[in-house]
Amino acid sequence: MTTATPSPAHRVLGTPPAAPERAAAYFAARLAFHTDVSDVAAALAGGGDPGFVLVDSRSTESWDQGHVPGAVHLPTALIPATAAALLDRSVPVVTYCWGPGCDGGARAALALAEQGFQVKEMIGGFEYWVREGFAYETHQGPERREADPLTAPRATDDCGC
Image 1: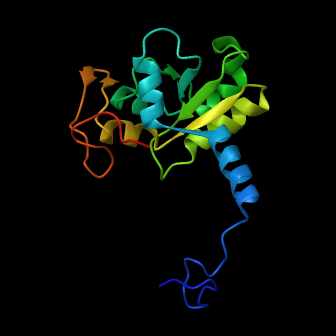
Image 2: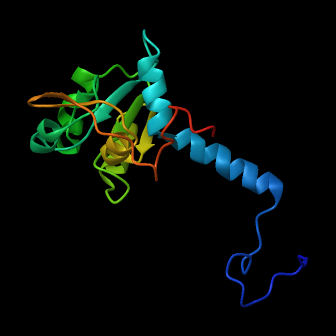
């Protein structure tokens, strides 16, 4: 049985959920700023122009260790000086860095937005790209690891979300 009033000792509902209208506005805004690894992979695998440019904002050493096929290498520190020459402001940009423990993708997205680019961050970064079992490129050639069952379903590419 549930109660309408949360117990003060119950942290989940210790702060009441937002009104549906506020929740809808928040989640719509969140989706305007973020995309996930699976959606990026599906867009890139669809053939043709995905409608965005994927930017890896990590160092050259990190890029060589592994990166998403088709990504543009543009380290965050170089964005102010080189983004305008490498990217088209009319094409949305999706940034990524190492993974959820790294704000590099967000810093790159901020730097690009400050230069007038439409931008989203790929949550999960390169770590989750690899953990979900998608192919990646290294300085030695293409690689792929088996999907981590904690991050992706084993029998399909679609998690159903």
